[in-house]
Length: 329
Image (cartoon, rainbow, N blue to C red; front, side, top):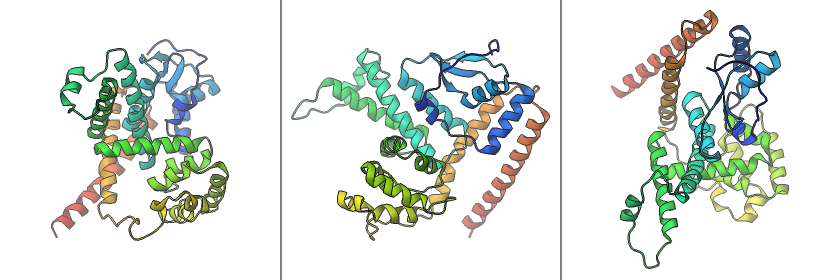
């Protein structure tokens, strides 16, 4: 960690939007830790713009507590976005909606970054493999497009393997992220509820929302906000969105709650979701184990971690016991 002090750093709205906001109790705990122990982690920046440490930066400046700043090297803006997404996916417990959004943004950013590198003759995927894998076509596709498509395919496959998803799901999450970005400028409060997991909106309905004109979208926003604020289920959002005149006039057949389009009950859904989430917990714990100065942390932080880990251990044992009992009949 470098020398501590104060700096005038820039905050990029797009970068900040990729970082899930802390819950009130999490923010208070971070504020308490910094006020007692100082700022232990550097604020990471790229060309003077914060890529990690927005909350620490705000707290330290408000409490006038010095902090260290560390520059991170990226070849382009999209590389920075991809790094932020991967960093958040690996270190935080996040909602399934935020997870989809970050994976989609990471895929989108890496595609653009690879295209830029390819234009400069330094794509991560070799030209030899690209040329060999393309079959002859009746109409020849430009070599640049062939390389771009192959690069995108490989990127989707790699991210799918990294996050335990199919290649097609990674591509689908990119469309999900694009819909979220489009809605963020027009109904940011609803988007915040969606990404936090409070509003359950299906992929098709979210895309339909993003394609509405501003007038129709405002009417839909009023309907959604009129629902109970704590939690809006898929059935409630689907009923309101599918029943809107804007969606019917647009001819979005997928949104009509017919037997054909209603999602079938999936008994594996909850277990599959948890199974996909646990690796991020493991990654976060491994990272904490490696980077933490255990001799220097406060007693309250140590006790808080021990309490949380014991609770996690108890829940894991109970869930494992239930799974084994049901499997044994």
